[in-house]
Image 1 (tube, rainbow over the protein chains, first blue to last red):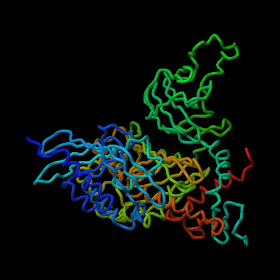
Image 2 (cartoon, each protein chain N blue to C red):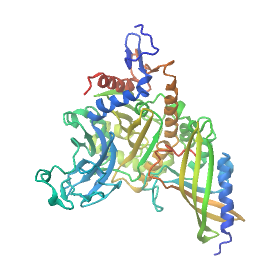
Image 3 (cartoon, rainbow over the protein chains, first blue to last red):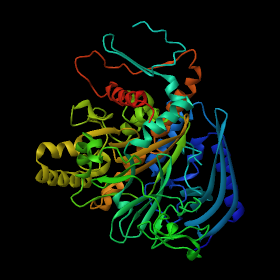
Image 4 (cartoon, helix red, strand yellow):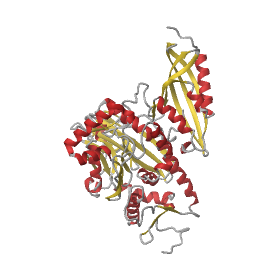
Length: 162
Length: 425
């Protein structure tokens, strides 16, 4: 039961993820995930132990819905993201928490800026990732993006991957 | 009628039944003077949704919430009686309670430590002996809102002491509230997780949008793509019913069938055999309680209802309660929740929340596109001086009214216009 990856490896992955999201390369972004992975955005201000089976989230995608979300965001009819917003994902405070190659945890802080029609919205918070190191590659199994604000009055929606 | 439409200050609503047209002056969405009048003629004297009873389950439970431009403190006192106060110290005005929700025996203002019990009574303040007799006799208790009442667990406030009672105000909407609350034999509850968001569009655009089914296919094409991918069938609605209904006092509803699953007793393929079996059992029990016709109505029929002016109950792929309030003519704050039977299975609760998020809320496959549409409308109103009118004529002059028409919005606007035309209060 070993952990072969370092914090630097995780940082590389998270920076790659951020750059793919900034570039709207969502199919490639999805390739960073394991089959069966999930992506959650709990309501703003949630504690880390919140669960989508008992709390109403903003996003609680299983693998099927995550792939559908990516498909949706590729369409002109995803009106909120047409024309595409301009995004910049900042990732900091990366920590490799614990675990083994089979399953380990990483956390980071983030600020994501989204600009559309001359209005810039700021999403800030922290991520908790569950990852695995399989066939010499890190894959994301589960990503939770916690918004560390009281609500999303200023942002209005979570229409991008944050 | 031959009215020059450009630069016309009044009226706001032009209904011409002979020609079958209904138009709304876009100034109603942008003019700060209109918003000021809406505050006094509508929000200051309508029953406004505050909270659901499940949010204050025990004595001492409280929540703070902005309603109708006020900051309110809603608390269940030691006798279990819910009370709504203005959240402001009678001394200098500071918010007495600064937390969103919690449990307290007393509320102490942080400024001069005036302390109030759960009935709002001032029970302690430093150097109390320095106040005159006149200032001792209860004039420094928390001020309750003029009227607080509930219908089947939905609590509303009214800031006008002279307004008619809640049930009279709710009029025909109680039929639909009943259809919703009857989902449970025990009680309904708000599921943890508030959705509070804002966007740059006039509040009336969201009232219209909340029961506008005409926009469904064009605005929400990606949602229907998703439903098809998930194994749903468009058109599989189990009911052909599709009609708007005037519920009185500016309230209206559309009731219709739709292809999505309903986490009461209309299963979809994704729920598997187990989900289908559970839905069948729920339907059987509903039939025992209410008879076949009403049971099937509860199980299969969707409705979108706007309780004038700003409370929405959409009983669709999940139940959403939504209220919204204008901070500015072009800016509103939305609060939304989901309501569920306390006695449903864990599996059904999961299906319900999963279903909700497919369509609804700030991360759903549909709501963000609604907000985008409404923002674009608001931006379009910058052309007011040259292009000044919205059209809400669809379905006028037809032999039957259907929910894909716009009669439900005309009902809203007629009441809005009636209120705004009334003399200054």
